[in-house]
Image (cartoon, rainbow, N blue to C red; front, side):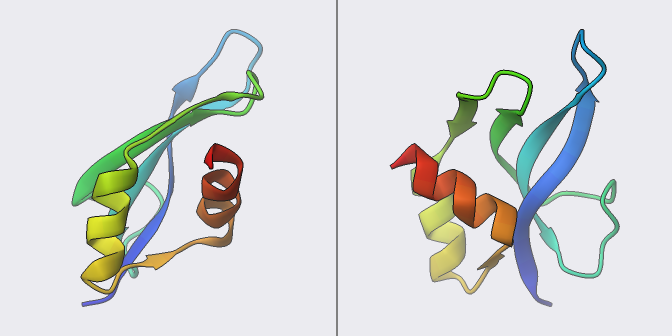
Length: 79
C-alpha cells in the first residue's frame, strides 16, 4: 500500500474558502477518505497560517510516503 501525504478539506472559514488538513492517507483513497495520521493544518485565506508537524512528516517519508506537490511547496515555505 502506497501512502501519500496530501491535503484534505476540513471546513470553511468566514470568507467562503476552505481550510485543509495535511494528512497521511493511502494513495487510492478519495480526498475525504480515511486518514492514517493528521500532520498539520493549512488555511489559504490567512496566507501565512499553517501548522506542520515536521517530525511526523519526516517519519512518514522515512517509511516510504510520498509528498504531493502542494505539500512540498508548503514545507519549503515553512523552512
